[in-house]
Amino acid sequence: MRNFIWGDWESTDLERDENTALLACVRVQGEVMKTIIFHEHTTSHSPSHRYIVLFLKKYIEKIESTHNYDLDDELMEFYVSLAATTNLSAGATGMCYKTYTLDKEQYTKVVLNEEQMMISQGTTGLQTWEASLRLADFFVEHPDIVRGQKVVELGAGCGLAGFTCAAVGAAHVLSTDCSAAVLKLLESNRQKNPAFKDSVQVAELDWEHTDECAKLSDSADVVIGADITYDPTIVPVLVNALKEMSGVLGKSVMDLSETKMATLCHPNPTADIRLVLITRK
Ligand SMILES: C[S@@+](CC[C@H](N)C(=O)[O-])C[C@H]1O[C@@H](n2cnc3c(N)ncnc32)[C@H](O)[C@@H]1O
Image (tube, rainbow, N blue to C red):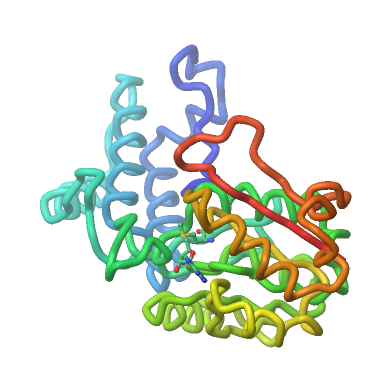
């Protein structure tokens, strides 16, 4: 649904724009239902009902704006019945699937089960945060940073950034977190991605426990983390954890910031995009 090509309905003379006109015709509306809404992947890994309703709402509004085209009965019936039973407010709760496509051709996907609420079961880790999207995009664009490397992800949450490293060729990824609820979800998300699940392992790690971090020094060529703290007082703890994980990084905090590709902070940090880090030996 996210990759649906909407065409140019606003400025369109649909008689002349064949592609957009095609999307409006009743027969193609049926195809959209079959190949997107009732597609086997959509039904087995369903996005939130809110997302489906909003997608169909936009599609229906576009079709209605053309005047010349009727609405497919099945599309309308499905939309009305789903909309009637769906909480359309942004504060919807419950688990849903999100499918992240890593390439334009949509061959490489990461499928994650996630909570719709930002905070649930006392943790922020059951939903994918904006910083993880940025970090995953970064690895798609620069796979050489992790290809053939052993990666440890700190505060992995649902797992997107680390799973993306595995998908683009990391030798091994250790996805870690400290929350029991997050670890359970992380492991079940690992299982849902057969294409690379064997190169990913899930483990409990609280980076405030430096002795535990030290045990990982052989497993970490690259350490990554997305949105793992917004509290500046935690940063020294985090740096300490990184020191324990890698002798090279452990030289000093300054080495960390001077190392090529040591830290990546989004140029315009917002409340949603906090600390994104990549360190490597
Ligand atoms: C805002 S979420 C980000 C999750 C994921 N990285 C993302 O970007 O979607 C912060 C994550 O850090 C984890 N976390 C917080 N403190 C931690 C600690 N001391 N050790 C390990 N993980 C921690 C939380 O459990 C949570 O999963």
